[in-house]
Every structure is written in C-alpha cells, then in structure tokens.
Amino acid sequence: MSLTMIRYVVRAAVRDKLIIGLCFLLIMAVSLSVFMGAAALTEQDRFVAVFAAGSIRILNAFGLVLFVVFFIRRSFETRDIELMLSRPIGRIQLVLSYAAGFSILAVFLGVVSGVCVSALSPHLFSNGHILWTASLIVENILMVNVALFFSMILTSAPSCAFASLGFYVLSRMMSQILGIIDSGKSLLDIQIMETLMQVISALMPRLDLMAQTSWLVYGPDPRVGYSFILLQGIIYAGLILLAALIDLRRRQF
Amino acid sequence: MHHAQKTLLVLSALFALSITLNVALWFSVRAVQVEWKSVPPTPGLSGALWTTLGDAQFAFRSYGIMIQNMGDTAGRTTSLRDYDYNALGEWFRLSHELDPESGFMPLLAGYVFGAIRDHPEKLPPIIDYLEQAAGNGQGQKWRFLSQAVFLARYRMNNMNKALDLAYKLAAFENPDMPGWTRQMPVFILTAQGEKQAAYEIMTNLLKSEADNLHPNEVNATLAYICEHILDEREAVADPLCSIFH
Image 1: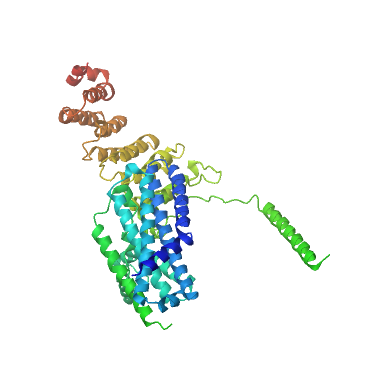
Image 2 (image 1 turned 45 degrees about the horizontal axis):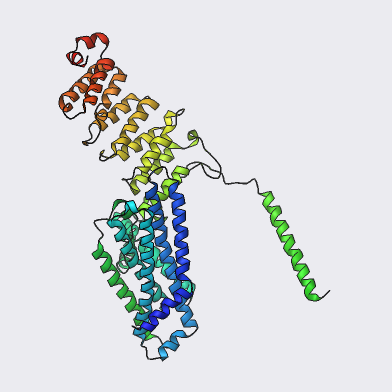
C-alpha cells in the first residue's frame, strides 16, 4: 500500500466536501428524527434513537458509495489511474491503497454516526450502541469496497452507483428472501429459482444482520456478536477486493 | 434596438408569461388538497420490512408514528368514530409482529383509540389486540390486559368477555402485579350479581395472600367484601366483617 495514495484519497474526500456534506446530512437526519420522535405519545427517546440510527445507516451507505463511484470513474476518465500506473506502483498496490483510503473514510463516518446516535439518548446507552457502531463501521467498509469493485468493472458512473446500491438493498433484504424460500411458499413451482437465490445469497454479505436498530432499544441480539461482524468484514472485504484485483490484472490499458 | 437586446426582451416577456401562467394554474387547483380516505390497508410483514430495508424496529417506529397521526395531518382532525377499527386492528397486529416488546402501540390502542365512547361496537379489535399485547403478563404487560378488561366491562358492557379477560389477568404468574389485578374477576362477578363466587374468590385470596399484601390492601379487600359483595345483614353475620368492623 502507498501512504501517498491513501492521503490522496482522503484529501479528495475533503476537497469534494464528502465529510462536510455527510456531516450536514447527519445533522439533518438527527434533527428530523428528534422532531418526529418528540411527537410520539410515549417512548420518545427510543423513537428518536431508532429514527436517527435507521436513517444515518442508509445515509452512510449512499454517501460513501456515491463518493467512491464518482471518484474512481473520474480517475479513469481523466486518465489519473493510467498516470499512476505509469509510476513505480503496481496494480495490486493501487487497488489496496484505494481500498485503505476509502476504508479510513468509512471508519471515520461510522464513528461519527455512532457518537451521534449515542449522544442523542445517553441514558439508553448500552452494549447495543457499541455493537451497532462496530457493525456500521464494518458495513461501511464493505460498501466502499463493493463500490470500488463495481467502479473497476463497469464503465458508467450511474451504472456503478445503481449496481452498488442494488447490491446494498439485496444484502439487507436477504433475510426476507431466505425466509420466503424456507417457508416453502412460491408463486411458481420452479426449484431452480430458489436454488439460484440461495447461491446468490451465499455469495453476498448478510447486511441484514448488521447495525440493527433494535439493539439500541433492547440491547444486542445474542445471535449476532463481534466475532460474526469481524469475520463477515474480513472475509467479504477480502473477497470483493480480490475480484477487483483480478479484473484490473486482466485489463489492457 | 440591438438584436441582443431584442432577444433579452422577448426572453424576459416569456419569463413573465411563464410566471403568470404558473400562478394562474396554482389558483385553479388551490382548493384541491389531499383527502384522507380511511385507515389504509395493511401490508404483510414482508412488505412492511421492505419499506425500511429489512429493519424491523425502524419499521415498527415508522408505522407507530404513522398510526398515531393517521387522520390528523395537514390541518385536519378526524373523529374516532370515522376510523375503521377492523383495519386498525390489522395494523396493531402487524406492529406486534414487528416488535412485541414495546409499550407504545398498546398505549396508543388502549388509551387513544380505546377512548371512543359512542360506538362501543367498534372496540373488539382493540380489546383483542390488547389481550395479544399483554402476552404472558410479564413486566408491565399485565396493564394492557387490565385496560382490555376495563374496555369490555365499562365501554362495551360485555360482562362475559370482561370476565374471561379478568380470569386471564388474575392467572398471570407475575409477582409484581398489584393485588387488585387478582381481584378483577370478583369485580366483574359482583357486577353480574354472582355474589357467592365473588365472595369465595375474595376470601380465598385473603387466605392465600394476606401475608404478602400491604395492610391497606387487606383492609381494602375486607371493605370490598363487607360493603360491596355482602349486604348489611350478611355483613353483620360474617365473621370476616366482624374483624373489619
């Protein structure tokens, strides 16, 4: 990895006003959550925490994905990547440096989000808040790497954004899809579709198990712990980065 | 006049015309506002979860606020009699699937939508939901069933339903429930004129629980036996009432 490249990515995020923009959106989300939650008949603090956490989680994913996609596509279009590869920096080093730079941003925004949610209702603070923040950080890291992968293999920025966000939605809904398959209910009696969905599911991260807002109200779910979150992050980030590296190695400039 | 100035003049005139047309269009639809038809149909559990990308708690809270404010938005207020209570019951059941622990929705059902007075025939979905929300009565959940008993007894005057619920309430194995919850069937039986059954439950309660009850609760129980269940002549002859008096 190249420290210069990592610094370059972080500076680009600051220059593109990603940090300020997302912090502004976080403030808006928190303000709206306080406004909506305060209108509840009872359990106002829980409403605020859940509304803020649920919306902040989506903002993190969308903001980071859009930044990564447009940053990488712009780097291809302005031939920055070709310029960098003409220097003594390998393709593997380039991708890993990008991934590290984006991951630093992902961790930073995850921590800021965790602090925001915890500060909103400090009397509710529990292990659930820590687990929520940790899993949001891992989810952010996974999503920046997924966006990096799609930006490497697709040529149009909107296609990359749609693919990454579609991936995000599908990962978060995977529990529902698996539940429908397991219940045996289907409109069409086509076994191959169920098998295909199971295969797709096995190749995707289980984001539905991450950053659950119920942890902020009732504490952590005993079925999901730090070990699962950490393993999911390491395994899937490695998988998606390897896929991006393989694609870049085969590409002719 | 130069060509450039003429073009600018034409563009400015077109711009002014656009504004005028927009204002005219706005006036033509000024009175048209969103209408509230009634309680909307309930999505299934999967449909509800899709709206928040699979986050059940987020969905529960979002629907909670929606149900609370349903019919009372955009400067409009809606009388409780205009709500479809069967559809509301569906929403409450869905919310129970999303979060069976929260006390928000039972409170909303019992105290807000249960406040309807002139159409008690609409209450059964609320009572059924409160019974469901009470679960096994652990923690503070027994309160929802006591609210259901109240609605059945005083709003619907359905004594049989109230008695069934009261027996269920009294049978909860929750040591933190106050004594009056155990006595609830007695209140209903007394109202039904079932004096003997009410008397037996109360005296059995005193025999089994007197040591665990606060002295004020023992006195209140005795007072209920001697002043409400028994008439004056029976009370004079009853040995329990001689202690009380």
